[in-house]
Each structure stands twice: as C-alpha cells, then as structure tokens.
Image 1 (tube, helix red, strand yellow):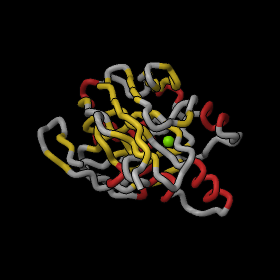
Image 2: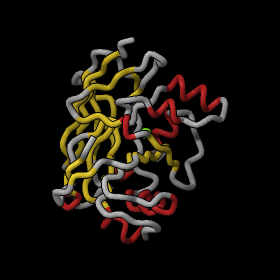
Image 3: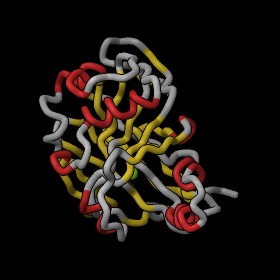
Length: 221
Ligand code: MG
C-alpha cells in the first residue's frame, strides 16, 4: 500500500505500530483489571494493510476474529526521542483503522507467553481508511469513533477516554523506534469488540474523519 500524505508526497508505510489496552473499559471487557503503566506496543507487518473498499479475510487457521475500531496516526515527519510537547507536529494525518485479531491464536500465545505476531499479523488484519490532514483535526483527544456491522451499532467511544494520548504515544514510540514518514500507529480500541463473520460489512466512523468500509470474507483454501 502507498499513502499520499497531505503535502502531496507519496510514501510506502515502513511500519505499523499498534497500542493495546489503551481504553480502560476495553481492558475490563477483556478480563483485565490492571491498567498499563506505559503504552503496550506491538507491530503488524505492512502486508496486513488493506484499504477502505477492500475485505478482511478470516484465515483458515482461526475461528474467532473480532473487530477493534481505532484512530490511526499517520507520521509525516521523521524523528527519534520526540518530546511529548512537540509530538503532534510529527503527525501528518489521521485515519480510521481496524485492528483485527485471531483471538483463538492470541489466547494460545498468551497462555504460552509467546508473541502476538501471528494472531495480529495476518494479511488484511489492518484495514486503513482515507487520510484526513492533521490540520483539520483541532483536538485528537476529542474524536467520537464508532463501528457498525451490517448497519447495527457495535462499538462507540471517544478518544477522550484513551489512557495514553496521541502525543504521549508518539513520544513513547519514538523512544524505541525511529519514526519515519508514512509510519502508522493504531491507537487502541474502546469497548464493544466482537466477532466478525463472512458476509459482514463493517463501517467505521468518527467525527471529522472519513469513514472506512470493509467486507469480511473467509479464506479460500
Ligand atoms: Mg487494538
């Protein structure tokens, strides 16, 4: 996938960073009680990206793939050790995204204290909607986001409830990874996650962001 940033440059995302457990109500619905003391970061391969209008493919290896609607940060300016106070200057755009997980594979991995790379990294497990310039978003912590399946509301939340703000996430990630233009950061999901099924149509919406639409298909094997 290539992205056209608001300044007109075309980039191929180099990495897809994701934040887990970033909304307390979602932590609780997953059976957790302890809130993270630092952002929980994992990666997806760029081969997991799929554009709006495409389809999420449920892999033959999994019987349980839930949706997680998330606001995605698109990095426009590279940097390392970015100060939280400056972090939003490095954001070129925002988009809606879905963090898809093979929950059964993830449960096995958690039990074995193994990484989540397989559970989170299948092809099409990172749908990404159209980009909205960051200049059009006055406050990334004041976005209402929602997900519906076949027109039925499933998730509704607000980025005001993030445990770690966009600025804190960008600053934290840049302490670990050199951030580069086109890098993506999925910022976590509010409560209401649930399983998707072949034939479903998913619609993610948020105030000020363009909607994301994806179909759901079973893997042909
Ligand atoms: Mg997530």
